Image 1 (cartoon, rainbow, N blue to C red):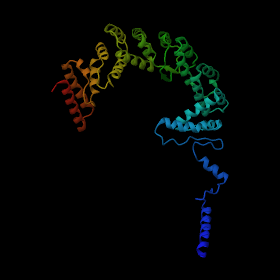
Image 2: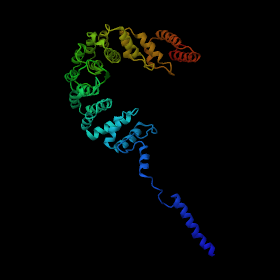
Image 3: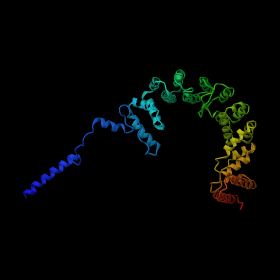
Image 4: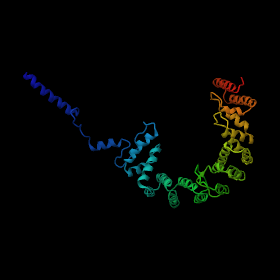
Length: 389
């Protein structure tokens, strides 16, 4: 009994010694790493601020953009301002989402102080890029103050067209006010060249003719061209807009303006209007370059998913584009299992002839064994739908 009674405490002490050595099970902490070693480990973890630096946390896991933004924003919000500036100055690659969030965070914290900070940086590519991004975002909040800053300080930056994003924001704001305000913005631009296009919202009483006359006669052009001037005007006053374009062919000399005219035609062809009005409107396009008209009708007649539009069909008849419209619309039915009832508006003999043309076109495009089977199945479906079998 004595041996048994003494053996139990001895075993307990041995077990305690083992556990203390391992630092487990008894609730005791393990050995604390040296301070420099801990710093090295922290420095390797993205998303944490260490010694004034920051890097984005890993967001490769979440597939949802909202989740990725939440993870990034938490890390950014906890980061020191100077660390965020340093990260931007490093010109990180493939980090667009993180960069946008960091820029927004800095503006939320500093307001216009963010712009003053950038102006105090050493000249170089990083300063140009960050400065333009900061001022453009400030322009979203106060376009006219940003415009003043751009005019006053644009010469301090190296890029020839530095700050065009500010002009884009100012043009958007101006369009919601008046044509005169838009022209005022255009007049402040030292270069007569557009580098990108954009869509804007126009004031209810916007004078489209005034701005278009300015552009057609070679007035100062914006860095960022409003791509929907003609289309927006046509949506409000189709006859006036079409008549203006018909009498100003010089407006089409610039490529992006010719593209805008083609979009305008596409919109007008789909628009509901009386037959006499439609005829007057579309007559103004008769003098435009045939290439522009053909390209517009190709855009109109593709992507229909095999459904015909009564308005487009009337427009096609007036512009001698019925065949183009119907052939491309029928081509769009090749992946369908059934035809839309809108084809009933086309006489049956014309549909029969159209079917042969589209099938021949398909043969010329692709004629493999797989395509042949698909083509035969498609023709059988069309013939049954149209009662041709």
